[in-house]
Length: 194
Image (cartoon, rainbow, N blue to C red; front, side):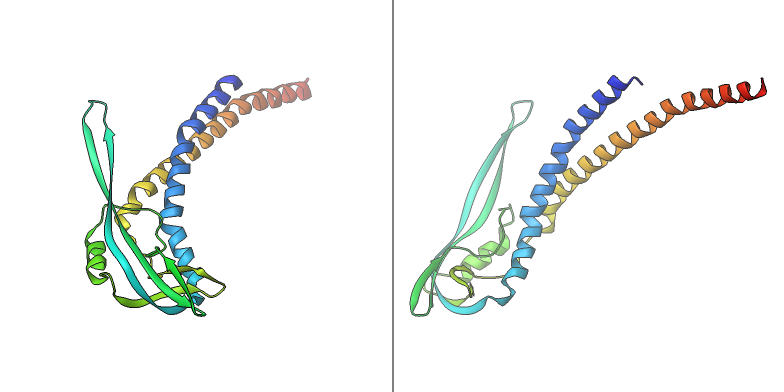
């Protein structure tokens, strides 16, 4: 394969597979790795009494259209909560339930949380000792493993495609270079005999 064709294949392979790897890895990081890292960071946060001011199930929709102009709607749920707490006789307000960044379509456990936390409920939250404006109701990430499957497939597809593209081109480069080396070694052998 000519050098120009090889570089073109490398460019197109990289352009095609890189977005799969980048977007898949980004979703895995923000949806799964970051909540677990935040939980570790919050290991020394202080348990503090708090009062629920409001708690409801947030709902949003995303509509997509396929190639046949058919629309499909996906629902995403979140826990919309507000609570107040006191640190050093000063009152603070937070709206963070947990460390999850992404919302998902799983609503069963979220409905249970909303039922358990009606307005006026006295419970506990976790407050950062060095910054009392940072608080969370639960440190444990509530992540559905089913949500991890699509971004993991995207990331693995992108990685496999990039590895295949690069390894194939490296193999072709070796095969292209080897006949020249063989012919030059044959010429050297014939020169030695003469």
